[in-house]
Image 1 (tube, rainbow, N blue to C red):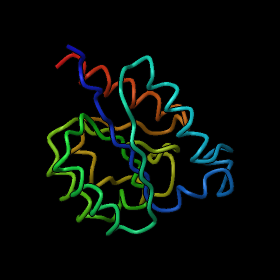
Image 2: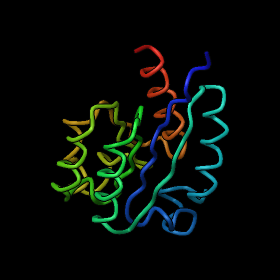
Image 3: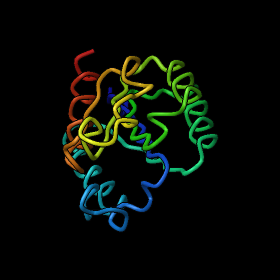
Image 4: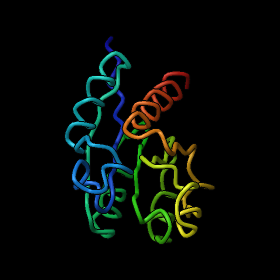
Length: 151
């Protein structure tokens, strides 16, 4: 009997489609497509499948979370961008999920403007990775894969 591949949803919020162009001194020079391609390669030996979603619209992100609520998602990696600091609706949607969730930020949000220091998600997600640039995505993927393979 073969084991079904575990699926991890990667969600990227507002402005992350502009990676590589937007403030590269803060967010790096890689595009989101390059980060996703690298993440797919990292997922292969971990035995997980990735699904990617990015939107600049809060409602579309909420709709995606509602959609995957009914699927057999093993984990979520989310870079909510600015919604981190403002969206109670995103927080409420993520509370629907029972799988591990890792909140990720390319920059160290605690070394930036004061309004970025508060995450409305930090106390409900499994963990948070901040400040490691694109490497944070692989760190999140490794952590979630380890968690779901241990359970």
